[in-house]
Length: 432
Image 1: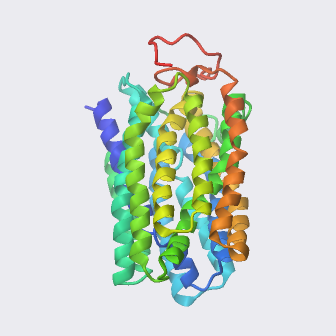
Image 2: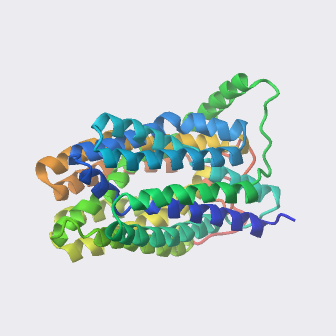
Image 3: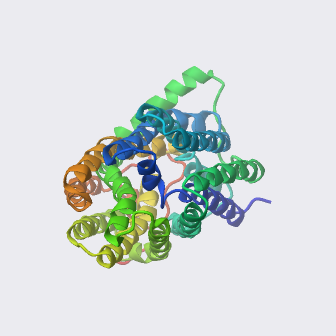
């Protein structure tokens, strides 16, 4: 018998497997690209093509999840990402030209888009189908803790394996883990509380889902402004993480200390775990979710300024812990807020559209900040990133002004297409 507890366990297993596979290369990805002969501009441009791939395919793959099934989308993601990751290793071995890196980076982005939106939508609908009545903030927080634990394991292992065997080894291992996750998801992940509609034909259904996604996504002011915030801040977060690898090795004084880069990613992972623990407590400090998001976003700007201003390895390292804590604490709150404003049947597509906006931000910020690092150095590029992140504060305020029910409710409405209506009195009072 499927229960809320079993659904959550499956969700945690999927999060653990996905993040372990991804994080095996997080600590050494930028170093890997630079070792292949790319400049900072080219390395972050390759990352930008990855985010461009996510931007191009977010909505189409979200539509796949909403019209074919969330399970099918996940399975396609494991196969696509495994194959494209192994192609990355081939490019590294043959020292391929930049355009080939760009093409494969787009394919890696495609692989990730099969996951984004689908897993989250599967969780929310499955919980509704089995009668879950708890708080989604807490469920997402536990997922954040699992994500941090997997990242801790993967990043330390990736850095160690790269040092002992070679920079390509963690990428090969990632491909193997993804194949294993295909088998796990095939066995455990089944669509619950969701039935794809194909009676009108696939093409017509795709058009209808796309139109509804605009109707319940971009045309809903509270959701739209949250997506605009992603456009501005999302790309900076991607750059900030991946630039830490060469920046900290530069501060450390040893460009081949790959274990240091892996250790740094592990520290970020530990901070994410703690952030997941803290998220429900931070949520209770604010009556409205947007209040917490605005405060955390403002503090994020401050930490980016500090990373760009400090000149010592240990000072930057300590600030990175705070930066990761802020990001991890905000994510479950944002997920619960967003899910409370979108209808069940279009959930995966709209969540993918939100990821698309974040990816679009990465397309323009990563090459720009990478070029800034080439010209002025890594520290000034973080100061520029802080200025861009500050521009994301007004959209959060504008989303708050819409006074949606999801901003204060204990549990988001998981089925109603009118979840974006005016705020209603909360059933249970919450601390101010």
